Image 1 (cartoon, rainbow, N blue to C red):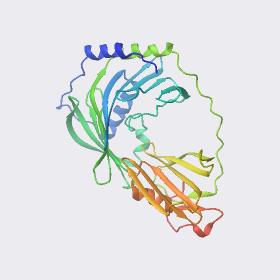
Image 2 (cartoon, one colour):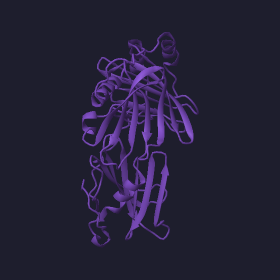
Image 3 (cartoon, rainbow, N blue to C red):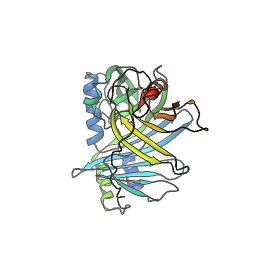
Image 4 (cartoon, rainbow, N blue to C red):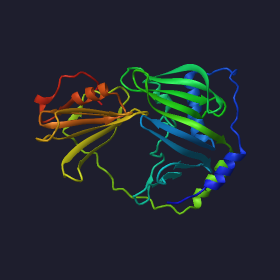
Amino acid sequence: MIKILVGAVTLVSLLLMPIQASAEEPIASAEALLHQMDEASRDLSYELSYILIKKNSIEPLRYRHAVEDGKTYAHLIYLSGPPREVIQRGREVSYFEPGLDPFTIDSNKMVAPLPPVMKTNIHELSDFYDFISMGRAREAGVACDVIRVAPKDGTRYSYLLWVDTRSHLVMRADLLDRDGEPLEQYRAVSYVVNPKVGEVLKNLSTVDLPAVVQLPPQPQADLGWSVNWLPQGFESVSRNRHRLVLTERPVESKMYSDGLFSLSIYVSDADNYTVREQLVRQGRRTLHSHVLGDKEVTVVGDIPPATARRIAESISFVDSPAVSPAVEGTKP
């Protein structure tokens, strides 16, 4: 596990204070505010300390971000438990996890506990979500515009965001279920916006990180089943055919995303040990599985249980039309 930048950026944090905002300034439209938030999260040099609150846990984290000479640098540190961190420099993202050899992949985005609404295409989201201004409130010691990102069709979760009126960074993000109850919260404790953060992060360019893992190209498998209903906006990301490591059981899968939430569908042969139907919900994640004919269909994703069930029941098989349920919907 490498340790870098902690002392330098901590010093920056002590010397700089966040900019205070006036609650009397005019409020822009909700969509305009989200575009400002997206631009700020991509372009500013900043350090954000926050906690991720789930039902049974609280995780403190620190995230630093900057763009230097056209290249994005970012550094995420888990502040409790075993040392863990994620480092991004340009299109290289390195992961340091306990019990695993460090590795680097070719990507322009971290897989990390950051508010998903950050660095999301707001224009594309506007086709499937309503953006609603909820006034102003104070969070992390600063005035914030409060915005609700709510699905137009009611088939997925929503977000309530607190966006700093000056820096336009997210100070708080609540993931809400369809009853308005929070499933998880991202809450900023302190933050800094200053070019000096970028100057320090640029030192990542000289750090010796693991070599980029060269992954073989994954051909898009031609699967023998189709999904006949998905919430509007969910597009296919990948499809795959593989075997489970422990059982060698063949599994086919498809992954979908609407830019804010994602889900995966798995299909495998059912056997005598297969549970006929089960539903597991843990925080934002839902797992619904049931048996269609001689196949087990499982849907896993950041979606409500009713949505997962409807997707699973819409699966039809090319070679087994008799088990195809009569469910209307949109075909991806």
